[in-house]
Structures are given as structure tokens and as C-alpha cells.
Length: 207
Image (cartoon, rainbow, N blue to C red; front, side, top):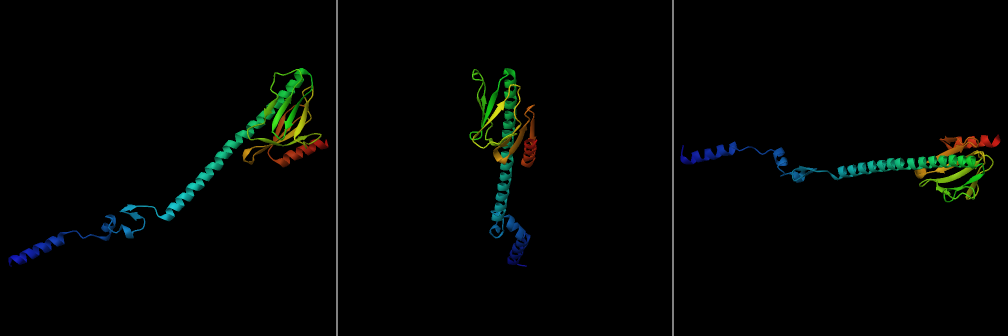
């Protein structure tokens, strides 16, 4: 065997010893990444459809959180207004009973305020109270009449009693409260639905 044959065999052996580049190796090395969906320069990437799905999911979660958060904020505002009305009613009853004189409470359905009407010689107490933040009075019902104008006058007698009356309050987020105040004791009853409230007022007016 000549020198030339030995050189050819040596080259052949060297060529056979080189590893064969498989298709998977070429994909991982990035040589065929332009043909592989979801792969850019050998790295995995999102397709357009996947990005749209992610954006839709994020928007849905954001909407759910916004609704829950608004409901969380609106609830306390109405509850605070209910407590405020109950406190003012109890205060006016005690005031009328302590002084032994008639006083009043003007319910402003336009500005949604409660105007305390003390004796003419008493100027120490605040005369006006806001019902609540973003809370309005929808309707005032009394045992003898219903509010038809912009204001309703409620009378507190010297013994601390009033006619039995009811209030319909509307808060933010379409939340409502239906309150009934007993004339003799001032005890407040809260109804969960408008129909229950109206049925109770109907019974009072028929008796």
C-alpha cells in the first residue's frame, strides 16, 4: 500500500469519527429556528394566540377585582348612613324628652340632609347633619302621610315619641336600606327587601 492510499484511509477514518448532526441538534442550536413555531433564536416564545389569551384572562381578573372592591367600598358607606340616622333619631327623642318641649327633624330629600330643629333659645347644637357619603333619601313614609315634596317634617313630642315613620335610603352601587322607626320606643327595624318594608307600612296605615 502506497503513501497515497494511507493518506486517503486516514482522512476517511477522521471523517467517520465526526459526530453526525441530527435534526434535533440543529433545532437546539438555532439553525432551523425560523421553521419552528414558538422558537426565536433557539429560545421558546409566545405565539400571538397565546398572548391574546393571556391578555383576555388578565382583563377578566381585573374586572372581577374592580367589582369586588367597589362593593367592598359601597357597603360601609350605606351602613354608616344607617347608623347615623339611628343615632340622630335617638338623640332627638332624648332631647325632646329632656326639655319637655316639642322639636322637629326636617328631612331634605333634595340635598339628602337631616336638619335638626331645636328650641329657639338653643344655639349650641349643630342644626344640620349629612346622611352619609354618596347616600340619598329616596322616600319618607309616615303612619299618616308620605313625603311628596322636597322636604318632610318629622315632629318629636315632649315625651320623646313620634309618629311611626320609615326611610328608604339608596347608597352607591345600587345598595338600598329600608328602615322603620317605631313611634313610641324609637326602635329601628331594618328590612331586607322593598316588598317587606311596604307590607309593614301598609299594616301600620290600616291600623
